[in-house]
Length: 323
Ligand code: NAP
Image 1 (cartoon, rainbow, N blue to C red):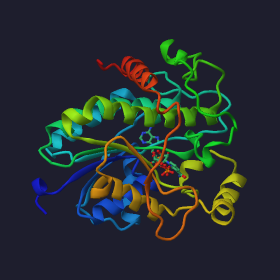
Image 2 (cartoon, rainbow, N blue to C red; image 1 turned 90 degrees about the horizontal axis):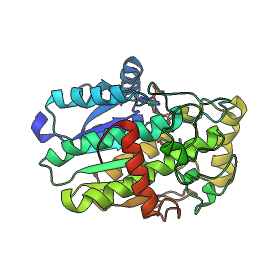
Image 3 (cartoon, helix red, strand yellow; image 1 turned 60 degrees about the horizontal axis):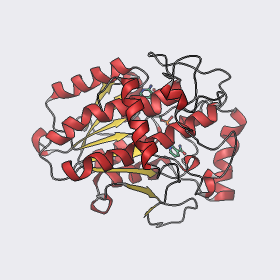
């Protein structure tokens, strides 16, 4: 297919798990996939391992834990001359056993820096590319998760603590050492992940509020299901990595294969029924064959429009963009 007729999607963190299988599913639908990854060799091998056709994808370097790398990625993408149809913010790290906060290149706590701040900068820069695209259907999709939503069963587990950004005191204080949490309180690594995913949903909602009507871009999030055997859990206890998929398959019924999670990602990016801005899609916590998606109600904190605006303003300051 000629480059100017083919839809192009950028997927961050497409070297494994949901992002990789989403890349595979979108390539199979005829899209060209920019796999935005921090490890180029790994990403190329991963694309080959799932049988993606050569020419259906391009691997490009992006380290979300470096604001400079995000800026360089955007420049490199623009140099390809491709028109952007969709951006998927998928990459994430989860480090539940970290005793001390790790830091990004820019000195921010690594989980929030990778999952939220790097993506926040990427979204802000690539809005211009989406706006400039002549396509009638343009989408920006950010991955969410059930553990960041206390209104869902899977989000009610208070270990180590529910997500809670407080009044963003940690962001207000500059978010560098010794500050490690967005609310400025004691470092809790599992909570840092939940907080970062809450930021993802607040960012999506604020993008929708600010830009949907003016640009026509569809902004959405989704929960792919419990994809319990992706490398996301690589920093957890080995025993957890054995028991968790079994538990999700046999007890909760929440388990979703990477293949199915990738198909869900591709559907939210490409299918007409997901062209509904501001939505948070879910297929529920108990999987059944043929399960239909629905617009999941998000938490009260994720619905807090004042908090979304404050998060936007402070995040913009931390990544160096104007509001
Ligand atoms: P995964 O297999 O570990 O994939 C994460 C991806 O992010 C990998 O490609 C990883 O790259 C990349 N990444 C990590 N740090 C990065 C950085 N600094 N710069 C660029 N890329 C980076 O995890 P997954 O389960 O597929 O998770 C994907 C998304 O789904 C996440 O947003 C997660 O929150 C969401 N999600 C997952 C589940 C689940 O059950 N698995 C449930 C709900 C939501 P490397 O290969 O180089 O490490």
